[in-house]
Length: 357
Image 1 (tube, rainbow, N blue to C red):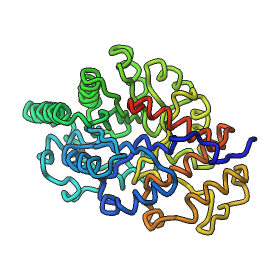
Image 2: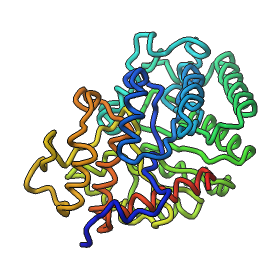
Image 3: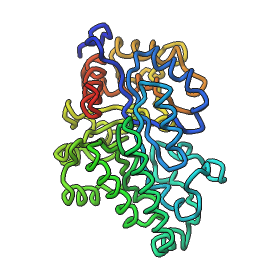
């Protein structure tokens, strides 16, 4: 395998974090330090996705302060029930007594970490789906989202939105209704969409066959589907984005899926502050274990960019954009390409998707 050399990267290319959540309370107070570390590893553009109405304003504020941040706004399927229980609008959901959504995702999206929803249980989602008042609230929230999109031309995309059928307390029909509304917004405004999917691949394909490809496409974030699904998603103009799960040594499904993605459809992301990647190096820059199967130069490059600069957030278990070097190094190793090539490829793909070129 050819060794990686960062000096080979074309001028202007940089790391591109295709999906994260800088607005989350675990990291949002440390953004100056986070951005300094991002610049230190050659970071370029960061895509910051809102997940519910109370965080949309913060996403826009972050993008206004840090010009390399692209804002996207949407309603994550986990937070659909909040609309029907009086927790939309200006209220800070993280002060309602429920765990931060990013804390719930730290397992990398496993079923055991599904969120506890307000009003969930025997009647939670069913009550929502049968309540005209709640549906009216949801429609009003979606109308507010449309108004914000129209008033802020700097918004780069729609999402995070999607389908999560691992969460049993949220009506899947209602999830599809909200997702379809987001897809319509993206189509009407010629924006890409950032899509969350867990155990909803069949329904996603049904929706895509019904709606057709979006003009600007979109991305499946933190991809967890099969390798066989990849070409079908690509036919609908979607990019496939991989997170810290590619750094986990035993995750054969994700690695097989990664290898099946077309070079012009591949993206990488941190999903910060969730899905903390496994580092190939100790704090001293040494390898974590002798069976880490990575070429010496790739390993040393990743360790130089990450291991020796491990942040307090990493030690606390929280992710940040600078950790994309670990994801990039692992992806390069899986694909058998130089790290410089992986970096340039994903940079160009991100620029194309979000029309930055």
